[in-house]
Length: 428
Picture 1 (spheres, rainbow, N blue to C red):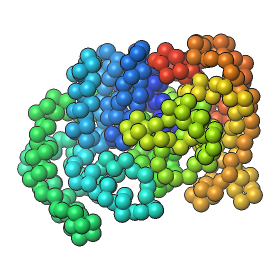
Picture 2: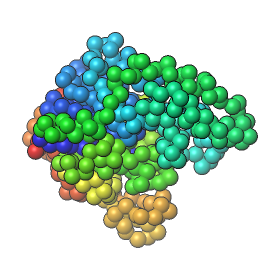
Picture 3: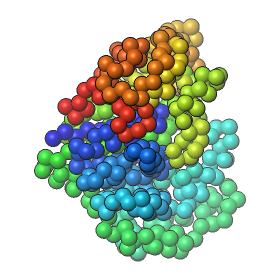
Picture 4: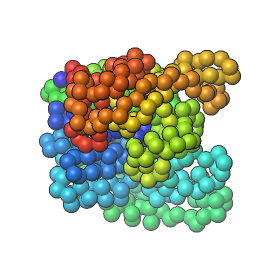
């Protein structure tokens, strides 16, 4: 049975949750392998809209086991808020598994995230202030708190003491903030242990055993390729590995077990936070995409920066991730446009560049080279086969496919769960 990874192929918010939900009825496990509650998925089922932040969107499908793997950082209060909200709406969350190796976001991580970002001034990264970056930094610096530490108070206290020894000097002497006590952090974390205990397991072992039984596992990436800490637009990136390779390191499953890599792209491009964005629009076209596409962050509510489709980025993502299939979302948002520009290359200081420049400076100064494709005015939300799309919409998809380095196997034509056109089986 296949092991598939779903990743964002742009700067995030591409609609990965909908793609995961499309496959959830055919899989046994859905695994979140990176990130934290700094991003979210929106899934629409009938008249119900669900905004998920820490939980894999597969939790909405009965019979699927949702997993939060070791590559994720967890704000436990946010986790419980999300679980409680779903339970109140009748969703069964009892199957959730959480890796004992996942790192915990604490009060001091959130505090440091906010004060550090403000301290950067004009050099701000655009962090959400939720403690994600400082938690990953502690992980790399080997002073992090893991889920398993919450079940041994002595170990927990030792680790918090070690982490706060340096951080309090920084908070008090540099940022003019009060010191955080060990007791307040430990007391807060211990308050969650009893509820957490049945959820925290060796998820790597459980996933391995599931694969040995022939079950199907879907890895659901947070953030996106261009925000990957290694392969994105550094330093304007997230703090984790959000490419397909991160599915292996973040879950403990060997990379040779992965059969399919499904990249998600919007029919245009958006970005949240600072950093280069060659096709960004500052005119009425950008406002149109933002309003028609409801481009506001699921987690933060921030308006997203909007621009036309960027084919070099799609080719880069196909190469970095080994994309086997693309799912294009929000094609319906383009309905009504007479002409639709598509970025096919960049102009960098008078030189045409067909791929994403390796130099951050070149990418920052890159000017998009556009080709225009004819638009359409017909409502496409009712289309369920490719042939039911207007001819110009079909041509747009085929042109994008030829530029993007992988086949486009499914097309979102509306926000609803069933508003999608499937051209090829994503798991075959």
